[in-house]
Image (cartoon, rainbow, N blue to C red; front, side, top):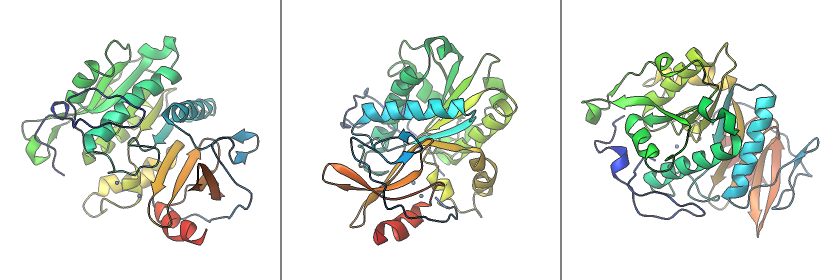
Length: 311
């Protein structure tokens, strides 16, 4: 998989994203789930902007804007931390709450994630924990850009997963030994959108294996588009190490906040906020109606071909 020959931080289309303001000068890059689960229909699960389907006494509505989304993601992450979850995933569209991957320019989507990561961290991480939080971006040049824009003046530690090499045009990056990047005082890792270069998720697995397992540290993967790997977007024959993550890394991961939209005549949304169930929603007017819910994550294929058409 080839990398762009132009440094990421040098190109960024001047486009607007709803509810967000982005710095100039960035272009990033701009994927579906495969697990066998039993589906159960739920007759009485409805959710709108005021109320949500419940798990015990836990209720959550589909967010009306990004401010509410970030609050929900913060609360879900806090509950997961209390339950001692070490590896977590947050995934949602950044080009609008009803958008799908690819609706926005690659640079817009990733810069949107960078902005939202900063806002999420400001909400989620207590002031005394800021200097104990390390945020990993995919490449070294993105760290440079982040320090001069979205994260300017912040005390978070910014780091990178890969470093482009002289042969970047041919898809090569320099190996970064993750154990050398981590410091003893680090408590939380936030990994930003590791999905353009296939090596990035392999480095994330290394980081988890070498610096999180058997420690009190925790890791959040933020908008990693992991459904690409779950769905077999990367053929196992050509990407055996990446495909192996579905058996080694993913089973250990808790998806604490998730939104995936489906377009077309049978459109809808797959939504989850920890510790609630996975819900399939359909927008009717200004409300979201819950069509189906289950305890485990359905595949995107199951939602698109089985649940939404039969609702």
